[in-house]
Image 1 (tube, rainbow, N blue to C red):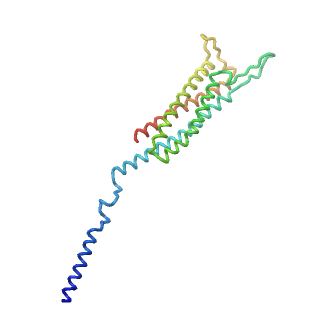
Image 2: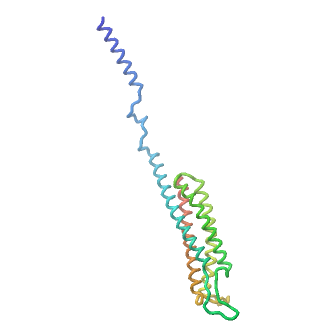
Amino acid sequence: MDKSESTKIEMGESSKLERKLGKAPLLGSPSNAISSSDPKVANNKKVGNYKKGISIFDLILRIASVATSIGAAVGMATAGETLPFFTQFFQFEAGYDDLPTFTFFVIAMSIVVAYLVLSIPFSIVCIARSYVVVPRLLLIIFDTAMITLTTSAAGASAAIVYLAHNGNEDANWLAFCNQFGDFCQTTSAAVVAAFITIVLLLILIVLSAIALKRH
């Protein structure tokens, strides 16, 4: 009797243990483990890294645009030359403020500089949070406005610089860069820096559009 009772107790305990093991989740079960090779997870990670790389490149180009736009604004604002000879009534000098086009150029490029500096934090946000949409959309809108302003200022100033170098006989506009060589070189360099800013802004717009397209 004792042997039969002990056999029953052992069988009862083993059956309980089997039921507990049957209810316990298996650690190696694919239904409970998070698979690192999930195509969706891998694709999201790839897209996130791609957007982060675009945002880093955007920040680098934005800083470069700040440098070129500052060079354009400061270069034009400091453009001026006074000839070493003068008469009793006249002194021959040239400055950016003598031409309204160059004055508009300085104001426009100053606005562009201020915007580009303020846009850097938005670019940093896009690096930290690569899936954000609103900051990228705002950057596209304002970058487009700034490229329009820069293009108008640079185009108008380029026409004046061309006339200063070559003149126009039909309009009786005489070339004066032979006399004011330093002034013309400074203004020409400022206009070139403005066109470089235009190219950089265009690349920034394209990068933001690509990042939004892959969202």
